[in-house]
Length: 530
Image (cartoon, rainbow, N blue to C red; front, side, top):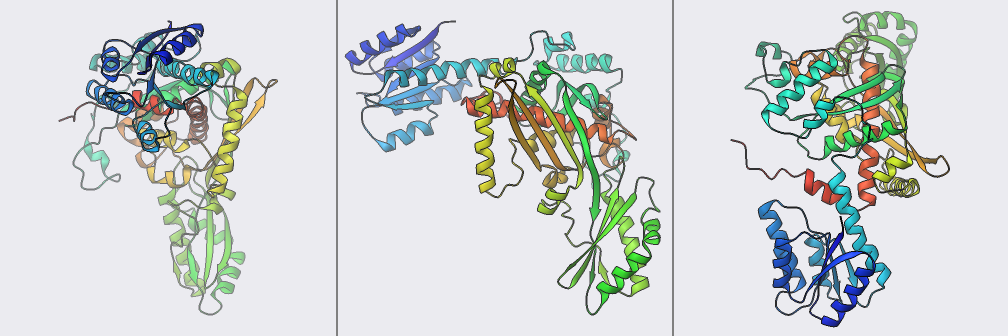
């Protein structure tokens, strides 16, 4: 399709000169000399770019842009790319045109090559936004019938997609179609129940993973009300597959809780000595009430007049916080009885439901790493290069570090939240689970990008809590992650999906399409559902 541009300027000589420039650059050119004529053309025709002068008789550039945006909002139409030019340094007008979403701005007199760069960026952005929902390998594997209707929102298609997925993975998905079970099952999950909060559920993948526990291709359910989110992770998953599976690995696993004993005299010495001499007894008490709970150590820390004991556990496939609360409380009651030292069950030293720099350094829950290669062809589809991506990530790390962010990433919390909601995880643990360091390297003679994420505080479960409820258990089962012995596999899949969401979003920032993508895919302009 030919590049189409509308030139708007009241100076006929400038229009003639610009027309010649853009024709030589391969554009189809239309011109007009006043704002009203421009609005009439924009209403009837589509342009990849409008080059608009600010100062004109009648409607000036800012008024034209105001009318363009008002019409777009009324009709929910595509956003017109506008590059604004002016020979006057009117700062208020310049501010206003960017408030109205100008694609770019150039001051007269200008360098022709600089102008062409700005206008050509508009068509590149337009193409990227249009393709964003369908980018991926040409010979994409998976459910072809599913692929044909994957973007459909009508009830019949949604039902059909669930049926196709059932056939593909060999399990029934009754509950995804609605709440079909006895609400008595909610006891232990919620109090004062009044109904079900319905969250849209999307499907990402398949993503190819080569982990210690997760091996193969996985469809990943994500629950969110944020438009463009699942689209981004789906795109990243498919582009990663062009270079092979994502490598994923659980590096460590520990959950802890830290009660504090109160120091009035020598309680720290008494309690410390007792732990050293009676550790096995304490361990036995802590592990007594659950087959999932294994005490793996107790750290001792004196903090002013508190003697803190960090009880560290392996909770197997359970989230485990309730279990270790129970286990630790009774272990401390035993210590209290033997030492006559008083305690508070919680001290905040473990950073439960908080972000903690200690946990970020040492790990909390699981430390999981995922890495993959974004090949040159995939980068080309995102309209970025490996070097440009490396430059962007390096600069973000510098700026994030200056803001005291220890683990810089693009938007790991988005993917984590959507999977947590879909799969019955403790969503409040996002306060710590979001800790993710994303790094990149240029490989293969500067053409490919190696990208890695390390999640240092990932708390997940495949048994207990909300994992046994209808839709939540089905979502886990879609990935083969429901039940005992599946939590490490689940953690590796999560890390792979987080990885898949990092580079497409970075690419959109680099090529200046991030805002427009969210304008197109991420804003539900429909009326209130009643």
